[in-house]
Length: 171
Image (cartoon, rainbow, N blue to C red; front, side, top):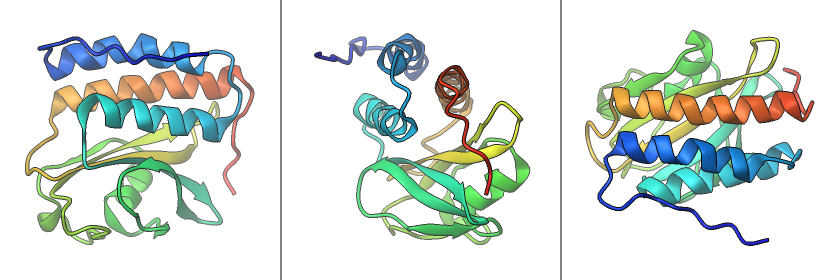
């Protein structure tokens, strides 16, 4: 089976996000493996926007543990009380950070990352089971368009998790 990502030429970010949601649904359709679906979701976002780093951290043993990602090496474990990922986990909401150097407790996995957006992932019991973490090499690279677009892609992923009854329990 061949999968081709179709990104509209000369499109705005909002238009690209809008085009990606049905493509992600198609990619995830019929695949029940959670890790495979996370990997393809990270690849779809990275290939579409060329962000510096796109990946997932999953709740395991009272920490966020590195999952599938695209980009350079990353931090392996993040405590719930550390960094942007930990803050998004605790707040159970998306966090947009225009300048990571100004975020209290930011974890610098790479000094090249300048801005960040983190979107929590919920299971069917509305528990946070992980986060989507996206880093950019540019300051102020994320805004409400990215928040809305990435949250929509995470909703597609959440529906896939629920549909495939591959709901990960918090440990």
